[in-house]
Image (cartoon, rainbow, N blue to C red; front, side, top):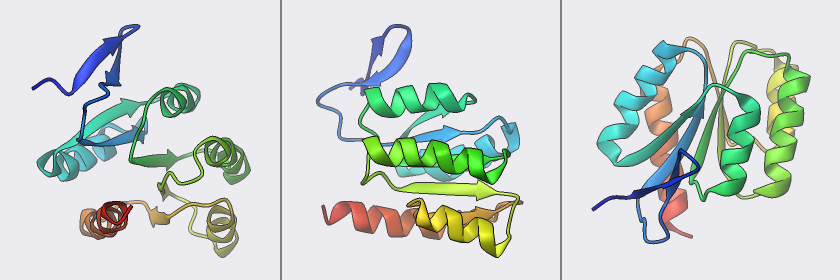
Length: 141
């Protein structure tokens, strides 16, 4: 069964798809590889995007279950992006991967509606536990 259909040359979910979907926004091939190894056995449809702007378009156009956002930008610019996403998809769980582990950064991300913030270098076991919690939460809705 094909869970994806084509839309303007991009992956787009079919209306009958029941697979869990995640958008990974990162330009770090190692992080993408680690996340793919974690999520592929869990039957996720993985959409990879390097561009933050293009990722917003995909989030608006497609029903996704989770967003993983690799932040390597100033925290305030990232908060603006998260704010836009949360205004359009308020229930979308966002997991942030960040180099900035300051209390102020974590507070701002939390206030912006981020579900979880993992610090780089990522610990795959930590991210796995986060996705287990997200899946439990998602199965209740």
